[in-house]
Every structure is written in C-alpha cells, then in structure tokens.
Length: 234
Image (cartoon, rainbow, N blue to C red; front, side):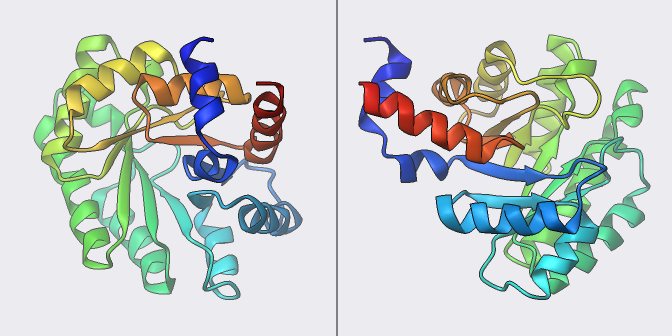
C-alpha cells in the first residue's frame, strides 16, 4: 500500500471534503451552475464555495450559512490596490469569509517588490478586520523556482493565510514540485493551496501529502465520488 492509499484508508470522506475549495468561477458560469454548487457544498461539506464577486453577492444575499470565498483582482492581478480593496470590501461587508486575491504579477516581474508586498498587505489587513482568510495566488506557471520562493516570502511577510499556486486561467497547473517548494518556504507560517487542473481524487490526495492544506477545483463533486470509490476498494 502506497502513501496515497494509506491516506485514503485512514481519512474519512468528510475529512477529505474539508480540504476542498469547491470552485465555480468559469466565465460562462450561470446562476443555475452556482445553485447546483451550493447544493453540492451542503451535500459534501467542502471547505468553502469559491465564486466570482457577482455570484458571491447573489449567494450571500440568500444563504448566510454558506462559507463563501470570493476572488479579488482576478485573474490577472494588475488591478490597482484601491480597486482590490473596494472589491474586497464590497463582498466582506456582505459576509464573505475568505478572499483569494491575485498577486500583481506585472509588478513582481518588474522587481517592484515593495508594491507587491503593500498590495497584498492592504487586502490582508482589510480581510482580517472582518475575520476573513486571505489566499494569495502567485501564478506559479509564470514564475521560475527562485521567483516562486521570493513571491511566497512576500505573501508570508504580508501576513496572508495561504499562498496559492494558480488561477487556472493562465495555463499554469498545480504540481507536486511547486507544492513542496511553497510548503518548504512557508513552513508553519501559512498554508498552501494547490489549484489549477486538479480533476481527480488520487491527484488531490497526492498534493495534500506534498504539503497542500487546501485544494482548489471545479471538479469537487466528481473528486469526492471518486474518493468514495477508491476508499471502498481498499
């Protein structure tokens, strides 16, 4: 029995679902898709339901028991800080519990690290004032390993709760290599969220074992059903 199978054997379906951020942010997502996602969130007990600001406001106006996570500065990250703050404040005031913000990748690539740090810190301070978590997407697919480490260090210095691999919109995918690298960098100071191209239970478990404490995926329901089947076979 390998490490993945050992994890599946000892970890309940409910515990596994608690690692997953159930994500519905595709540009073509409809209100019907979101309503289905709400029912899946309730059925499986996911960590949170990740929605666009537009759909977040719809859900928050009707479902106060849903832990909603909203994407901010998504997906490019180059919105001015004041725009990110306004966007975040709007959903936090309505009850959003988590924020997934995109790092300003252009500023980072330009070497403007103070701007990147202050941009993240501003959103973190606002979110924390509402007792909300912040996960910062560094878009690993666009960075070298050295850049991934530097970006992660900035995320930690800014006080964010998680560093996140990818948006899933710019070609990057979550990899074991990146999760191990990010986890080594953050240590115990922050969590690691793996996101981007995660569609199967076995892959999700492997990423958790590599150091991810959250898994972002639009295939949450499918992954849970796969996990159930894998568990039954052990």
